[in-house]
Image 1 (tube, one colour):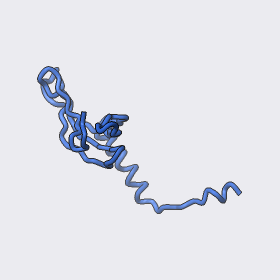
Image 2 (cartoon, rainbow, N blue to C red):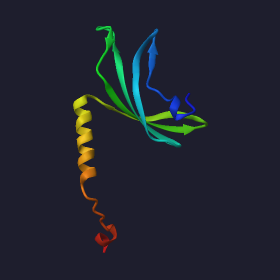
Image 3 (spheres, helix red, strand yellow):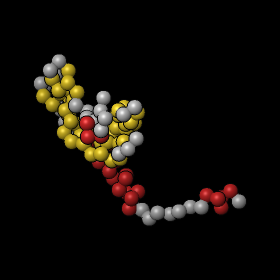
Image 4 (cartoon, rainbow, N blue to C red):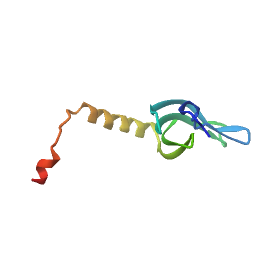
Length: 106
């Protein structure tokens, strides 16, 4: 089990082959709940090589001194990654409108 965020990884080895190879990671949040986005590749046994880059966002909770994965979201393709980036960028570029929810209740 990992005790620090830096120790967390998606690397996975099976029968002497690294079947999931982490290429990079970016820690989005640290603390009792940590969020990390990883870039990785998966070993293709038929092609005997690594496939294209993949991405995953993982949430971890620290309990009893160790991080445990609680959820994950896998980004299935570069096209999906681009669409997520575009959607987030569009929202970030919009002016923030603060609505007073209390007025609606009056």
